[in-house]
Length: 212
Image (cartoon, rainbow, N blue to C red):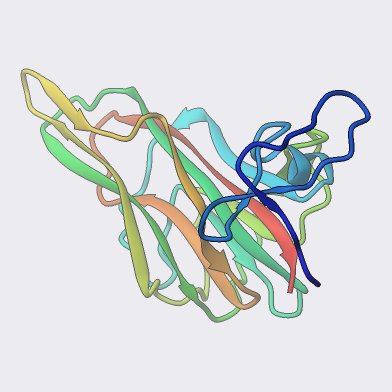
């Protein structure tokens, strides 16, 4: 396919005008977004969410085999889809009542089949219904038979002393821009490194499902 675009501003415009596409001086095609970045994939039913919307304590998790993360997503072998992680978030709701530090991260890697029976069906971001995803979701349960994660991306750190607290956090939601792909036979988990006394959290994972 040959694309012949114009470098610079087109000479004609207005309704019903037929004009060439635009290119930069290095041959790059210039485009602009008509809708929000994720509108098309969400509207087409390919964008999903797994979240902790009711604040809960976390179990200490560092990607170990059969650990208990805040949230996890398993892509079963033979699903025919890649889970492309787009966003992640975590936020403190109730502060800790004793000194301590917790770091939240996105852990991921290939895994043996996860056999934990307590699952959560992901939500479609387009219909707001729990349907359409081929992934298996988990919320605050042990990933029974799951393998140790081979990678981690840190998201946020939280420190609480006896008199004052401090947090080094993201801006609410981290846009991972599809940089993590969870293929069939792999998983991704959002977890905190320590269970601070009395502390509770909310958080989420968002992804797009793309045919392999």
